[in-house]
Each structure stands twice: as structure tokens, then as C-alpha cells.
Length: 172
Image (tube, rainbow, N blue to C red):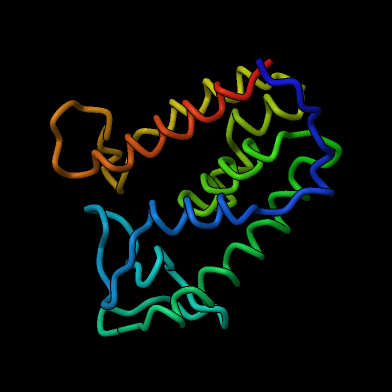
């Protein structure tokens, strides 16, 4: 049982543990790749665009230090939009980190239209955790990544399961 109090979102920011979790989940790629069939090109630590808004091109390469900077700029923008999308909602730090990780992976528009967001706005924290499991489709053809044994996007599903587990672990 969690005995901590939730904190209003305006007072939270991504923790060091949350940042490391995103980096570990994304992994580093020096050259631009298509991470999952039908997905956008990514580089570095899962970046699809650069701080100036330019999209990643297939011929791009990046260093680890530059990838960290690009990811941090991206996450800072995501945080701003994320906080604005759920004003006055209170979260535990762990919840903040895992939902921001979701935003980094799926994008702010997916977050804004998600049932997770709707549940949090309604104060339904456990339901928001359960809603994480709805996000298992990947690519233009909406392949179900929870399909056992698939080699296409199993990591997408295991990342969701990890978020769900962390989310449920902090519920009162």
C-alpha cells in the first residue's frame, strides 16, 4: 500500500529514474531506422524529429551526446503539453514518469485523445492504469503487438506491461 500523497501535476517534472527508463526502453541507434514496420524513422533515443522540427531522414547519423540533447528537448516539450492536458490532476511521481514515457513513445496527440487522460481528469487512477493495456497496436496496419511470440513488436507490448505494472503498484 502506498502512503504517499499525490502531488498536483504543475509541481512535478520527469525524475532522473524516469529519464533513464525512457532511454533504456528506447535504446540507442546511431543511424536512422524504422523501429517497427509501418512506424516513422527514428534515431538516437527514439527521436523522430530534431529540436528545429526537421524530421529524421534515412541517411542521418547521430552521436550519443547529441541524442541525449535531442531527447531532452523533445521530453521538455512533451512535459509542457502533458501538464497542460491534465491541469489540476494530482499524480504520484511514478505515475507522472510512466505517463510521460507513454507520451514520448506514442506522441502527445495519442495522449490527448486517450482514455488514460479522461480517467485521470475524472480522478479514476486505477482505470487509467488499466487503459494503458489498450495501447497494443502498432504501425499503419495496426498490428496487435500482444500477439504471443511475434517478432515484429513484442517490445512495444512488454513496455506497456511494464508501465501497467508500475502504475498498479502505486495505487492505494
